[in-house]
Length: 148
Image (tube, rainbow, N blue to C red):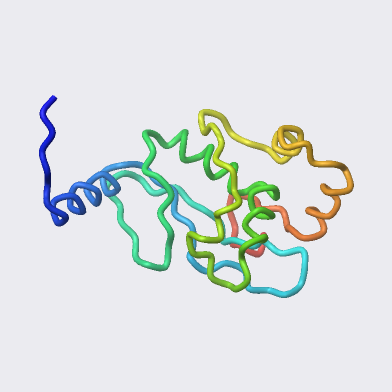
């Protein structure tokens, strides 16, 4: 295979085309800024079909090959474990990409639950109780970020 150089503009055009034509998950750049606990930490993620774009109010997670993988990613984001790891770096309402630094990447061929993650990472009952006291459950089935 012959390698060749492409210009920066062409590279970013190809990258944008990949994101534009692929399935992805979007999550609000600004999440809960509440000082009272438990709270949601992040806004609800949602599926964005191929050939959709968003503005800077959202972070794009992906691209992914299918809606199923996107749903598995959203199941992971909705776990208290994921959002507790984000909380370790999040010190304001905004959830820029740096707040995800401590979140481990998983195999997204399956959906995730807190119970699986707690077992995988050896989280004790005492630690689970602490996480539960800090993080509100997130229901992806509908309603707004407040759980309504």
